[in-house]
Image (cartoon, rainbow over all chains, first blue to last red; front, side):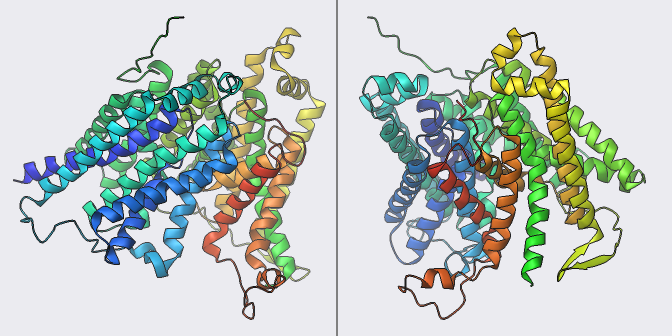
Length: 299
Length: 306
C-alpha cells in the first residue's frame, strides 16, 4: 500500500508540474518570452484559491479564480516590459516571483506569513472514502492536465500561435508583417500564467497546507529544467520533462540512506545536478528530449 | 537614528552594490548578456575566504587575496567551459546557461558548507562617531577597499592597453577584431576581473553581515537594477546607479511617507506611514520597473541589448 500511495503521489506531482511546464513552455517555447518568475504565478494561484475556498467558495470557483489571478499578474507584468529585450524580461520576472513571495511572508493578516495556511479544504472530501481519495484527486489533476494540454495545443496551432512563433523566430519580421507584436507578447504571458495559477490551486488543495517556503525561486528553475530537458516548443516534451525531473527528484531522495551524507547535503547535490543538467542540455542537446516539429510551408 | 547614519549606511550599501554592478555591466558591454551567475561569484569569493581564514587559519587579508584570485579563475573557467561555446547563441540561451551555472555554484557551496549562516572570526574593532553617525572599523575598511578597487578599475580602463582594448570591444567588437585585437584573450581577462570584483564585493558583504549561500542571489536584483539605472554597459553609470540604489533603499525605509501621501489630502495621514523593512527588496523592484518604463537606457547613456 505504501508503494501504491507513493506512486499516486508521484503521478499527482507530475500532473501539477506538467501543467506548470506547459505554461512555461507556452512562454518560452512557443513565444520566446523569458520568464524567470514562474513560481510567482504558481504562488498567487495557490494563495487565491486557498483564501477563497477557506471563505466558503467551492473548489472549482477557487481553481478558476486562481487562473484569473495568475493571468492578471502575467498581464500586468508584461505591460511595462513587453517592448524590452530578453535580459530585462528575465530580471523583471525574477523580481515579480520574489515580490509575490515577500507579500506572502509579510502580509500576515492575509496569509499568516511564514506560519503558512493549514487546513485547506479538499473537494468532495466528505463524500469519497479516505482510502481512495488520493486516486480521486489524481483524477482531478489529470483532467486539468489534459485540459491544459488540449487548450495549449489548440492555441499553438491557431493563427494566434503562429504569430507567436513568428515573434519568437524573428520579431522584426512579425512586426513588419503588420502584427502588433507587443499585444501578442502580453497575451502570451497572460495565457501561460493562467495555467500556472491553476497549477497553484491544484497544489494547494492537494497539500492542504501552503507556506511561502513552497514558493522559493528555485521552483522556477526546476520547471525550467523540465521545459529545457523535455524540448523547447513541444507540448509532449514539457510533460516528458516534468515526468523525468519528478522521478529524478524523488529517486535521489533515498540516496541519503545509502551514502554517508545528510539530507540537506543530498538536497543541495540534487540541485547541483539540475544546474549541470541545464548547462549540458544548452551546450549539447539544445532541442531537448522531444524535438519541436517545425512545419515547413511550401511557397 | 540620525539622518547622517542613514547617509552612511547608504554609502556602504552603495559601494558593496557597486563592486558587483561593475562586473555585470562590463560583461553586458562586451558579451551582450545579463550574467545571472554574477552573484554566485560573490558567494564563492566569500566562502573561499572563510575556508582560508577560519578553516586553514590564514590571516584574513591573505585569505581574501587568495580567495579573490581563485574566484577570478572560476570566472575564467566558466567562460572556457560554457560561455565560449555559446558565442553565436542568442540572449535566451546565454541567460539559461548563466542560470544553470548560478544554480550549480550556489548549491555546490551549500553542499560543502551547509545553508546555515557563518561568519568570519570577528575582529571586534573600534566604533567611531562621525557627525552623529556610528561607523565600525570594519565598515570604514569596506569603504576604503571599495574606493581603492574603483580607482584601480579606472586606472585599468584608461591607463592600460587592456583597458583600451576592453573599451574598444564594448564599442564595436567586430571592428576591434579587425584592428587586430585578440578578442578571446580580452574576454578571458574581462571574466577574470569581473569575477574578482564580485569576489571582493562578496567578502565585504559577508564581513559586515553574515555569510550564507543565498547572499549572491539576494543581491542579483539590486545589482542589475543599479546597472540598468546607471545605463547598462557603462561602468561609471553602474557606480552611480549603485549609490542611488543604496540611498533609495535606506532613505525609502527611513522616510515617513505620510507627509508625501498627505499632500493630496485624500488619505488620513495623522499616523506615520513607513515602508516595512520586509519590503526593502520591493523598493528596488519598483525603481527597476520605473526605470525600465521611462528610461530603459539609464541615467548615463548605456546600451540597449539585443
